[in-house]
View (cartoon, rainbow, N blue to C red):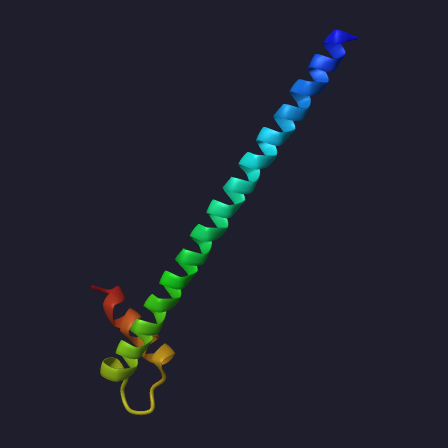
Length: 76
């Protein structure tokens, strides 16, 4: 009987520790993903603006300019 109570208490502690760890882990991972998405999104906006301002030809979209530039630099 005493062993059973000890095992039950250990199991409760284990569940609390694992649950707390999972909450922290999920918070850190989701925070990192938000930061990463923000950085990548900001970088894409900057590159799109640069390509639009300096590298597009008449009537060419940003996407078309990026594809053209990629083809031009692939063989280098």
